[in-house]
Image (tube, protein in one colour):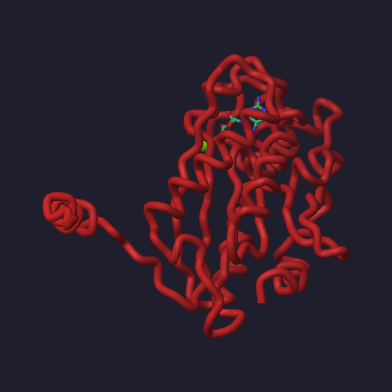
Length: 229
Ligand SMILES: Nc1nc2c(ncn2[C@@H]2O[C@H](COP(=O)(O)OP(=O)(O)O)[C@@H](O)[C@H]2O)c(=O)[nH]1
Ligand SMILES: [Mg+2]
């Protein structure tokens, strides 16, 4: 039976917002915890290891399900996934590049996997946004940008665990380092994953693994290049 009502509703109201991600390019999906300053209240500061572990497990789950996923990078309450579809002409794209499907399924898989791995009565939720980045060199810059944010965040988190908001107001990064040194603390000696973030990538066996010792991307761009070119 012909469903003319359904066809019309779809054409008028559903197809109108069907946005197709361009093919043959780099797609980044970034997932970010919603209001995590609230969600993390009372959790370990400056670095809550169980939180990072649950984010890593959620990223592993999602990377395994995403068609065309090459690499993922996480820090603070976020994870960015790089997807490509240009290995050959017929390489498929996840959900045929349907943007609404891509971001909604990515956020929901990540959210449910996070909840399974994190013990909390509070409900965590995550948003997801998509970026289309044609040039590979710009994809490298994207991950360098997120890692610079990781380092800045971790310094702020460490400083704010030892000084009040008022004491830190208007202080430069160098001044925050000096203030920490004055209390016998050294950001440089903090764990690598806290300072530089974590990655999810394919290990030597081809299985997805978490890398807790990522290099400083700006100093070793080859690390990114191996994953994303
Ligand atoms: N206690 C704690 N909080 C964290 C940790 N990692 C991230 N957060 C929190 O998550 C927030 C993430 O920042 P952002 O996404 O900009 O803020 P949001 O809009 O509140 O999600 C930070 O400001 C912290 O409050 C952690 O390891 N421990
Ligand atoms: Mg957030």
